[in-house]
Image (cartoon, rainbow, N blue to C red; front, side, top):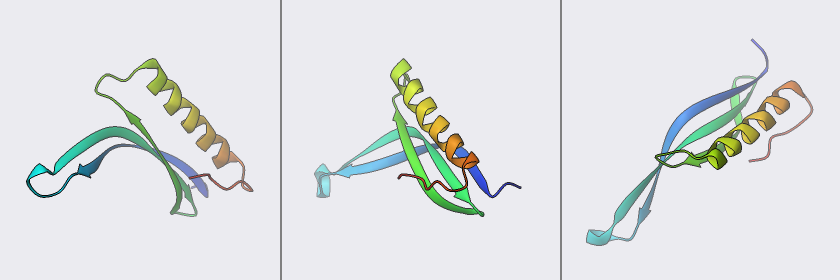
Length: 81
């Protein structure tokens, strides 16, 4: 198994707004890109997307994924979080 890995995970994140009876929870779908070195997650990037992902959503994901894959091949780089 390689020391450095990149994993993509469909993820839903929540944000609470307000307090008490007016509290509202918003949920956002996205993709989390994990950078793993020696079995430990050392960095992650979350790319949100809406219910109908756009071309811009796709491009953001591909750009972040490409950067993570480049990192996985270069043993001296550290991820930016």
